[in-house]
Image (cartoon, rainbow, N blue to C red; front, side, top):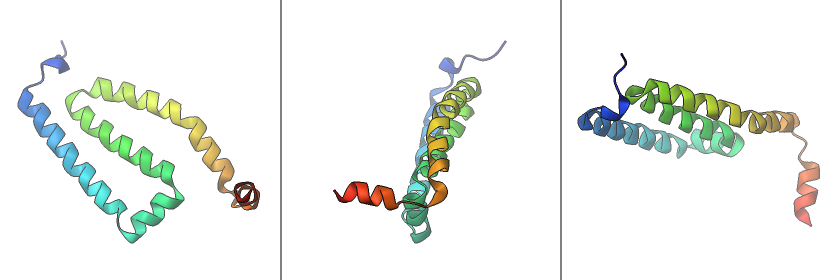
Length: 102
């Protein structure tokens, strides 16, 4: 019989949330570096995906089943955005620049 994640000790949940806050703060600080700003401007989808994955990792410490299910839903929902980004990798932004110039 599996333990009920809703009955996880309060201290464990609190420590997970504090740990997640620390990791998220570190991630935000990394994104403020020169390299982080460049990655954020060139690959914003990647930055979001990594942030969500970090969150799901921390959720997995408390409830692995819920984290796995959330990851599956997140993965499926990001397929269209990733496909769109890959199609735009040709580097031809002239048509977009002309469209925004109007």
